[in-house]
Image 1 (cartoon, rainbow, N blue to C red):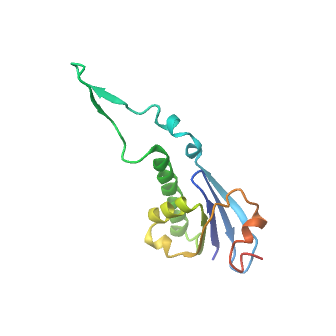
Image 2: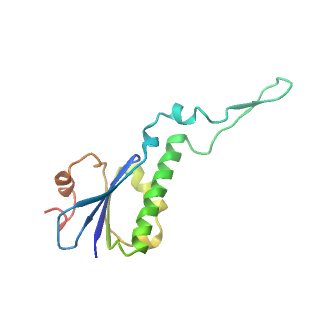
Image 3: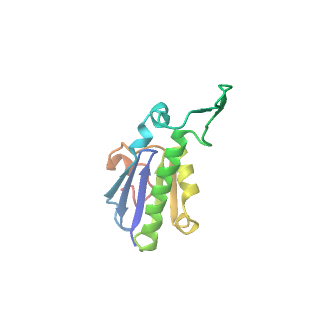
Length: 146
């Protein structure tokens, strides 16, 4: 069965597939989330602001429970977790190796089903999304690193 290696941060997830006896990493998918790169002020500029009363005595502001950046991080983590769960359900996921920016890794873990989490054999809390395949291999355990 194939091993899947996910290299991700809050804006991009690179998905690699490799066989258990092969160290060749084949990039099969790139999930992008450009909203994570937008500045907070641009994300929230169209959100409701302040409500005023008819008599001009002020009001209260609308605030979300999470800031826009955290919301976008959560949304992308949920999307990646769904991708992995779908791969598990269709028997495309044997073992799972996760390499992700620390904050994103924690959020991804919290969004994964327990069945998918059981497939994890390796985790690294490091942002390597912009590294080459050869550079990525140097961070992975054997037999993936040769």
